[in-house]
Image (cartoon, rainbow, N blue to C red):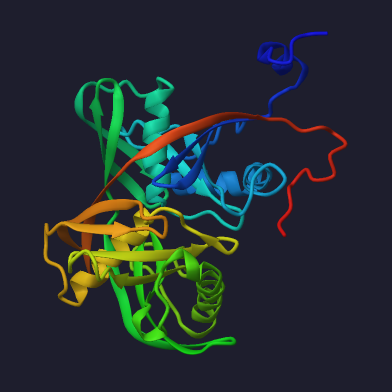
Amino acid sequence: MPPFHDSTRLLKTLTPLITTVDSHTEGEITRLILDGTGNIPGASMMEKLAFFKSHCDHLRCRVTREPRGSREVLAAAVTEPVSPEASFGLIYMDAKRYPYLCGHATMGAVVTLARTGFLELGPGENRVLIDTPSGTMETRAHVEKGEVMSVELDMVPSFVFDTQREIRVEGFGKVKVDLVCTGGFFAMVDTAPLGLEPVLENREILVDLGMKIIAAANEQLEVWHPARPEVNTVDVTEFYDVDPGSGPQSGRGMVAYGESHMDRSPCGTGTAAKLALLHHYGKIGMDEPYVNSSPLGTRFEARLKKKTKIGNMDAVTVRIKGRAWVTGIHHFTMDRTDPFQQGYMI
């Protein structure tokens, strides 16, 4: 009998269809797809995304849904870059949809590709450009003694679309939301009027409420991106408050998206949306440091770096800093008699 720990023999008996490297960014999973997609053609990341949706959606279902994944998994496929200076491209996906941008997954991808040798990084600060469906993102990987200690992202510009819009939410009543776009649209909800802090103890009620807010916002409101007509739905709810124990330039949040998933990290796009909203209300200035905490207590450091315009909308660029760690390698296979080829959700 062969030794049970002989992984080389095991891999010879199974044919891997998809290979991923998993990581977590301040607690939130990224499943980075490195092999199994084949060539993903397209002159732009939106063209690559369209191809992936039409030809590779079964791969999304396999790695993000049970029994191989779960509603808690956000995955990203690595592609060839589409701009001359970028190192690679990313297509983001979860059990429900394809987000146009994900900050925590971008941090996870940089750390993973550095650990696996795809990115050759030197000591100190390393500038890495990444193509995404929302545009090219500039990142900075900070390396000490061969380890990536942190990753900074300059998020795509964020803008406040509308404020204090009242919606009727099933089983809850009227809720006021602010609408902010960072790659996609967020329904921002201050938890103080709700009497519910964005903490783990309130996870079930807030995630359920968050998904109902997304549905209600899309039924009762209209959103549109001035430069990207495909961005026209509210996809995320972010509950936030000011942390009473840490001063005025810090706060907490809980983000709900996908198939009733709570972001374990402070959420990269959510942090950018939050700072854009606070700046709109005059509560934070340019280049002032802000610390955003997740329900787990992990943190992103952030600050507003630049003002710009998207169409006629005032927008800001937010720089976010966080950490990520590789957790494992997966070789996903598929038996031909498996009844759950596309996975399932419960």
